[in-house]
Amino acid sequence: MLEVAKAKISHREITNSKVLYSDFTQETPELKADIVLMSLVLLHIPDTKKILQKLFNILNNGGKLIIIDFNKNDKINHPKVHNGFSHEELKKRLSEVGFKSIEMKTFHYGNRIFMNQDASMFISSNIK
Image (cartoon, rainbow, N blue to C red; front, top):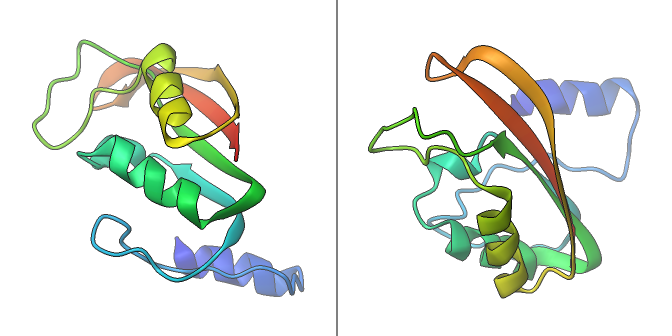
C-alpha cells in the first residue's frame, strides 16, 4: 500500500506529502503532521488509548486524525482483533487523549466484510 501511495503522489506531482512506515506500538518517530489517516488499523492494536495518545502528540495544533474502521459487531470474536468500536466508546477515548472536535458517522454497510460477517464501517474525523 505504501508503494501505491508513493506512486500516486509522484504521478500527481504533489510535493508537500510524505509516505512513511512506522510501528507506533514500538516507537514514536520524531515528526509532526497535519493529517494522519488510519484505515482498518485500529482494530489490530491492543492498546487503542495508547496509540491514540501517540498520534495526538505528533499532530500539529489544528491537525486532523481520520479513522476508518468497523463499527462494534458482537458476532466477531477473535483474540487478535477488536470486534469493532462503538461510537460512544471511541469518542470517549479520543476526548480523553485531548481531541477537541470529534465527528463520527457510519458510511457503509456490507455483507460478509468483517471476518465473513455482515458489518458496517465508520469514518471519524478528529481535530487536535
